[in-house]
Image (cartoon, rainbow, N blue to C red; front, side, top):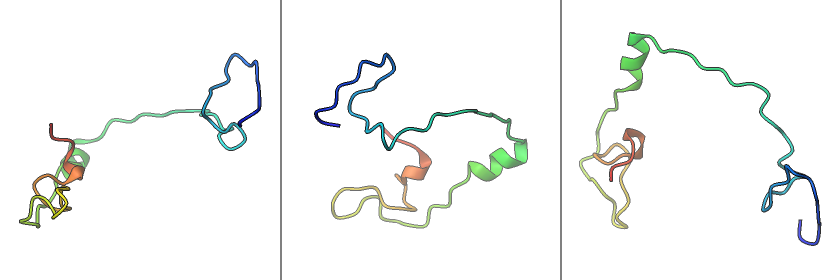
Length: 71
């Protein structure tokens, strides 16, 4: 939107407002059952390589990003 000026209070710079014109209308939350939690919290590790040749975590390895971030 270079060259366009807007005085709207809700105008957010650096966003193409012609594309990002949708707003969230509703949000819903739910509670998982014990069985659902057990199913979601298991990840099989099948790759013995922890990192690839570029130093990135390998999928299915000890530092798989699906397990969460490790600092």
